[in-house]
Length: 120
Ligand SMILES: [Zn+2]
Image (cartoon, rainbow, N blue to C red; front, side, top):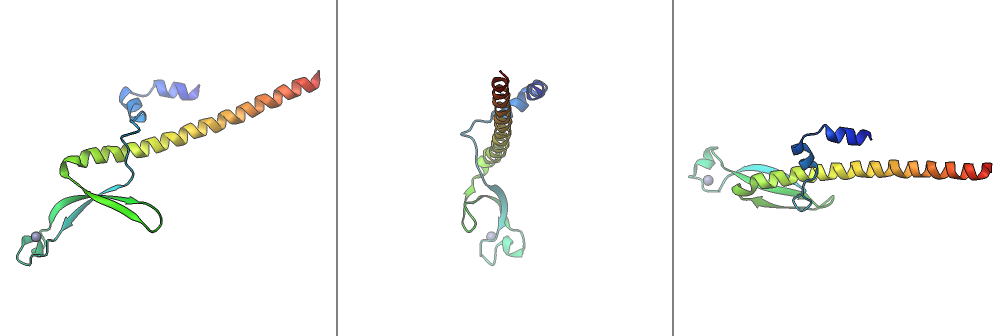
């Protein structure tokens, strides 16, 4: 009930964010890099580096990482999808909490039933 009340107070946009399409999620971090090209006559050799070059970095496990460069016109989408990932993850955690609470309540109900039967 508390959960429902809270939902009714949230804006459309906020609720839509919660419902972020599951296909539009991306785990990783977006990094902005400024690079040198190696040409000693280039302005980057004097400190004016090229960029930004956007890079998506993903930790696969303790020792492995993956990643790729992100074209400028995809940066906004990648940013959004990373946000979605965190949102979905948070909500899965919330749903999981609710389900544990429901399991606990079910257990209590069963206990009460047994008690009633024992009383007869
Ligand atoms: Zn250069």
